Every structure is written in structure tokens, then in C-alpha cells.
Length: 247
Image 1 (cartoon, helix red, strand yellow):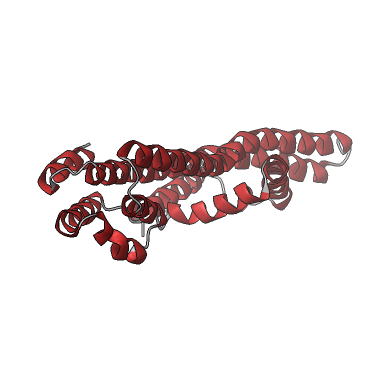
Image 2 (cartoon, helix red, strand yellow):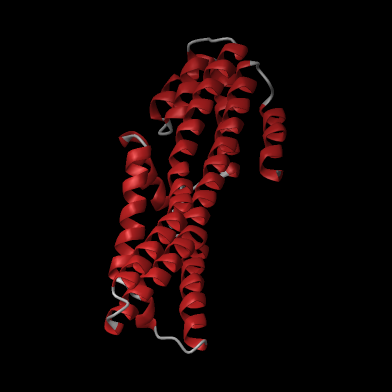
């Protein structure tokens, strides 16, 4: 569980609601169903139109990373690679066949399988870097869903404000209708700007950071597998990969 994400959400809510209360406002003044429908519904509709089903599905999976990010342990990865190199030195590359069958990570498993098949180091690097680039691009495309939401929400907030003002103008002769119309106008703007800057953009940036960290971990795996293919000493491999931890 990522405690900082939870703390960030709480602080965002407290800041907005607390600021409103300090100014003498009421929490109920920030609750407006038509404004929420315009901003949230319009944003969801826009991103569904913009993105494919596969991208949207991945973005929903990635949303869980905000509070439960995938566990990435560089030190454990280094120890795993060093263990592979020791097996390779003792039993040869074919000794990694059983290791490859038991490896849970598909990316690492592919590298091990290439080692077992006797692929050249440069060939191993090319194959794994191609998969790394493709996977990273797919995952970054999914994070752009939240960037798009951050772009649409303020605009739809303005749209909600305009719609609210239209209602106000249509009922100038009826003072009882002025309040709800003006409320929708201003609350829709608040919803759009707040959602974009306190949630959508931060979520997108956090997910990008996780994707880049995963890519860095896979780059380390590539370097380790290639080093094994080149017959490097396990100690030398460990020292080389330590640079990923220090960075």
C-alpha cells in the first residue's frame, strides 16, 4: 500500500473543503449533481472516444498502481541474476533450462530461454530491448488516458459554467432560479480545475514514474542476461548491476 498516495488525496480534500469553510462557505455549496454530471460524464465520454478498448483496459489496471504499486526490488533482481550466472558457470547455459521453466516473470523468462537456446549476446540484447521498448510504449500510452482527462476536465468545467449561466439568463425574471444556475456555473469550474490538477495529472505522472522504474529494472535484467551470455564472472556482473541500485 502506497501511504503517500492516500495522504495526498486526503490533503487535497482537506485543503479544498477547509479553505471553503475558512472563507465562511458550506460543504453543501460544493455539492452539485448537474455540475458533476457535466464534468465527469463529459470527461469519461471524451476519453472513451479518444482511446481504444485495450488502452482503456490497461489504464484501469494501472489505476490500482496508484495505491498498490507493483513491487520492484533491484537488489533482489541483482541477486537473482548473480545466481543465474553461477549456475551457468557450473553447469553451462543448458543448466538454466530448469531455471527458465520456473521463472515467473515473462520478460526474465524470455532472456533465460534465449540463453538456453545459445543465442548470441547481441541477438539477446536486440530481442529483449525490442520487447522492452514495445511494452514501455504500451504502458505509457495507458498513462496518457489520465493526462487526457486532465486536459478535458477544465474545459468541460467551463462548458458547465456556460450552461449554468445560460440557465441564469433564461430566468432573470425569476430570482428563485438564479441561485441554482449560478451555483452550477461556478461549481462546474471548480470540479474541472480541481480534478485535473489534484487528481488526473498527478495520477498520470505517478504512473509514468512507475513505468519508468519498471523499464529501468528490465534494462538491468537485459544487462545481466547479456553479461551471462558473454561469460562474465558473477562478481563482475554484480558490480556492474550495482550501478542500477545506486542510480
